[in-house]
Length: 485
Ligand code: PEP
Ligand code: MG
Image (cartoon, rainbow, N blue to C red):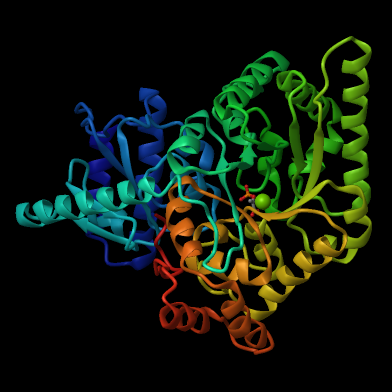
């Protein structure tokens, strides 16, 4: 198979017609898929040689489920021709601590199996076949980065309190058991978003009640009393379960049969998951939230399933959580116009800014072409977020934000300026965000931010950067293009 692929590739490379040459890419992808299928080992090499201990995977694009199939011990980098900052594969790569650089055009044609490649996800750069002196200085940069990480880890006992005394709650986004280890190491307050679908995506078949019960028990035990917010299954869109092929056929999956919509159409699935969560809590406090709520009546319907589960467990003599907090994710713009009745029903609200931005901007979060086109620091988007904070405060309902923007220091600063006091982010962001918070005066920030919200700019990124630089706020700058570190 590998030989046929190499021969065909050599012949097609000679063709001048750009259309035919482009098909070469499709052929290469297909050949690799076939080789993977035949060898049943996704890290096998196409030339039949034994794969090295450490591998960097190069692909046109990748879904989160596919990424989870690779051996995490060996996979030390991912380079995509496409990819985008808030795609779920990027989120999974971050959770696994795998450096990922996206939008590297033409890399599939240029790289050969066995090539040495250096992946710098912090700066969004990839170096193919670097010479030995470059490799040496790259190792030096890695060591420097590790020492920076260690310095952040040393701050884990410092309170996340701004220079003018505002306490900010910093939580982790998690989805795999290994993420829980970061609780201790980062000094986060708890888990603000546990994506329950990630472990489902790693299972060959749909996990039954017992499997889920064991998993949730493990998570709560590892969290050792720190609060964990479990989000019910958020599948569909780009998160597919191999056991649910029907979803694949949708033409517009991000707007299709997803998340709570599936849960309400298949209530036995939602019921089983809620029963496993409540049973695993064994009377301890528990927080659950529902993703992609579009209408208040969907929240009511989900709540009814939850109430039924609680009643059944109680009737059977089982323990129910001493406090059960139930929240909704705010990701669909329609919900912005139902905030009043929603806030009367929920114990907390969690803004999923990845999806909310995708729907507000009408811009596919997984599309490499759209990546970086609109900015979550656009004044009108920030005003929407401010409105959510103000309405939640008026209703006395805690509000959190758990999208990727919470983990970027400049965006996190803006969120705090808008009034957010609880953010949930990838583990590697907790240290930098805490450092930023400790150097920030929220009163000064508000003075700069509030009038700027009325501007009609594409983005307030430069206004906020200027504020940070002139007032000594420690932000780590990053562009919004292809840095997915
Ligand atoms: C979000 O949409 O912001 C979110 C946190 O959920 P996910 O990224 O898993 O869709
Ligand atoms: Mg979402």
